[in-house]
Image 1 (tube, helix red, strand yellow):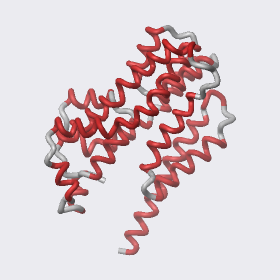
Image 2 (cartoon, helix red, strand yellow; image 1 turned 45 degrees about the horizontal axis):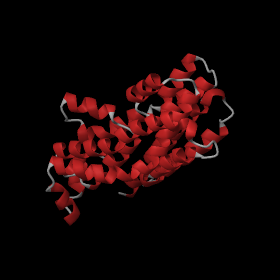
Image 3 (cartoon, helix red, strand yellow; image 1 turned 180 degrees about the horizontal axis):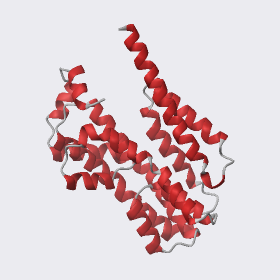
Image 4 (spheres, rainbow, N blue to C red; image 1 turned 120 degrees about the horizontal axis):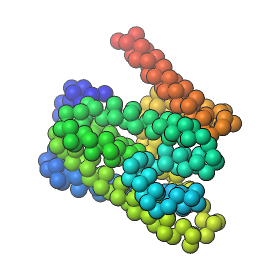
Length: 258
């Protein structure tokens, strides 16, 4: 739903929305920073795990830092490193990492009504720091406060990015430096599912969302036998088609009742 549509549905702001409207862009950035801080609890072990796994895969410090800075996407980084460890062909590694990151295209499309009017230089850095955490926080904040100005929205996004991206880089460094000192029985990989559960759960607000998530899980499990994680190539489009189908069906039912 666009920002304009939200304004039409919600002509009078709530007290909380009124307080948000009075914040300056700097205050919005501070607000986004504070709201994003809890993600550090999972980003730190997540990033450390990537540093450990990358070191075990034979990458040196420069390669790991370059990988992290250039890609800045934990899920695709893990996918690529795991496939490299399994000696998968380079083409499979590249395609798989891109496939995992295709969700960023959907994130970008849904942010257009809110941030599409930003200056090119702002859109450039927003695209760079667009990760699961910054997207999830920002889109919920924008939908909750549809009357925010463009500079306020950009400020909030900046604050969320400052609270999440630098800790990821720092945690990766810690993982490289401390990897050998971390006991093998410390299951740091718990951070991966917890991170995505924390991101996805609040987003399941409609039957279409729930149906898409359910099909994604079932399809990923059903096609887990495919090599090099290729089951994701099957599960992702099935989930998107399911979500779109359920949403279309619901819209038709609404029109029939109207």
